[in-house]
Image (cartoon, rainbow, N blue to C red; front, side, top):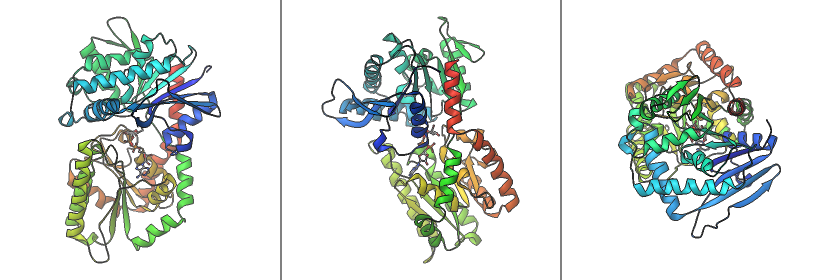
Length: 454
Ligand code: ADQ
C-alpha cells in the first residue's frame, strides 16, 4: 500500500490524552507504520472556533483537530448524532427525537470537516472514516473533488429497513454511503439490513459484495467484526492479578464469587434489565445469598442528554432497592460504581470474576465481552453471560447466550454459570479464546484496509 493513511473519527485521541483504548492504539499503530493523518473533533466546545483547525505532529502522525461551536455541539453531537441516530440505530425508535435544525447542524459540521480535510488530501491517500457521526462525510469530500479511496466503518448496529425508514431524511443520509468505496459493518445482520435497505428504498441491486444503484454508482459493503488486542489484555490481566487494586477487591470478596459488568452508562447496555435479573436470581436462589456479589462499573457518558440522566437515577434507585432488600451486615449484593478505571486495573478485575455479565439490549460488537474472555486464567476460567443482541454473540457462541429482555433467562444463566463444572468452563473458554487469538484488532484493521485497497 502506498500513500498515507488518513483516519477520521468524531473524537481524536491526541498523543498526550491516549487512553489506550483498543481502537485508538490500533489506529496509532497503522498511522505510525504508514505515516498519516488523524482528523476530527478536539472534544472541546469553544465560543470562537477558529477557521483553521489545530495541527500537531508526533512522529509520523499529524493530528488535525477542530473545536465545535456551542450550537454545532448541540445540533450535531447531542442532537442528531446522539438523540436521533444513536437510539434509532440501536433499534429504539421510541427514543428517537428529531429536529430539522439538528439534522442541519449535523450536515453543517460534516461539510465543515470535509472542507478542512479536503484541502489536506492527496489522491494516493487512503481515508478511513469512523462511525455514525460522519456518515455524509464521504459524499461531502467527493463533492470537493477528493479522488482518494475512502472507506467507512460503522461501529454500531444497523436496524432493519422498516426502522431506518422512520428517520426523516433517511434517503439522502443512507444514500450518501454510496460515495464510499467500502462500507464495513460489525455483523452479518447489519450487512443484511444495509443491503435490504438499498434494494427496497433505493432500487439498488446486488452484485457480489457490491451494491449497485440505479444511477450505476456502485460501492462495496462487507462484514469486519472488530476485535481486541487479545495477547496484550491477557498479559495485563496476568500482571494485574497480584497488584494492589486486584488484591483489595479479592480481600473484600472474602472468597465469594464475583459477577462483573463494565459498560458506559448507556441505555443500550441493558443495565436496568441486568440489575433486575440479578435481583431476581437472588430471590429465586436464597441458598446463593452471600455466595456471590455483582460489581457494575458504569462511568456516566453524554450527561447533556436527558435520557442518560434519567437512566442514572433509575439505576441508583434500583441498586438501592436490591441492596436494601437482600443485603446482610457482612454482604452487599450489588457494588455499583460510576467511574472509569485504567484498562490494566479493569483487566485484573475481569480476571478475578467468575462471571462476566454482558447483556446489552443491542450493541454493535461489545468489546467488554471479548476483554473478559481474554483476561481469564486458562486453568480456572470464568463464564461469560452474553446477550444475543450484542454483535459479539455472532462470534462467541460458547458463551451462555441470553435474551436480556427476559430477566428469568439471565437469572438462570447466572445460576448455571455458578454451578458449571471446571471441564465445561475450560472447553467453552478455550473455544472463545482461540477465536479471539486470531481475530484481533490488528487483524480487523488489516482486513478492512486490505479490502479497501482492492
Ligand atoms: P462502546 O459502546 O463504548 O463502543 P464497547 O465495545 O464495550 O462499547 O467498548 C467500550 C470500551 O471502553 C472497552 O474497551 C471497555 O474496556 C472500555 N470501558 C468501558 N467502561 C469502562 C470503565 N469504567 N473504565 C475504563 N474503560 C471502560 C462502540 C460500540 C460497540 C463496539 C465499539 C467498537 O457501541 O458495540 O464494540 O464501539 O467498535
